[in-house]
Image 1 (cartoon, one colour):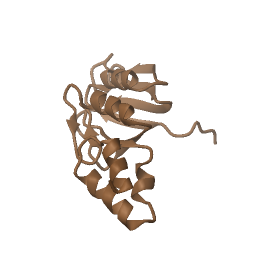
Image 2 (cartoon, rainbow, N blue to C red):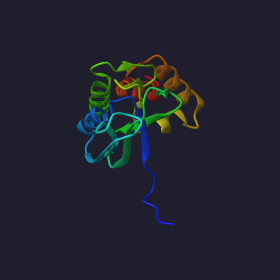
Image 3 (cartoon, helix red, strand yellow):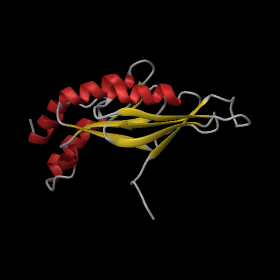
Length: 160
């Protein structure tokens, strides 16, 4: 069996090509690949975009125009691990613009309803610190936030 790893398929209702171009504009190491179209006698009008292959941040995706039957929800989300506040701000701003929705604790939905977690790389280590007081302070601070404030999380971790 030959395999190229995993490709994530995202189901859209007519916005597959638009979404692929949007994600490519947000992330580095990205690009749009092959676009396929519905043939005559397909489930959608002939020539309508069926799939768009794209890479975002080096990850492979296929955007599929499957129709209105399925919607995105928080059961699946993509985590973006950020080095600093500048990266958190960049991804948060880009992914919530033009109809995206900020959520709690670093979560958001983009304009297509896809859920994302925009989090500092070191957050997991802080929350899982063996010192229960440190982890509790960071968790409590995070739970009160929408977009995560890296400096505030660092202060909570340090006990300031």
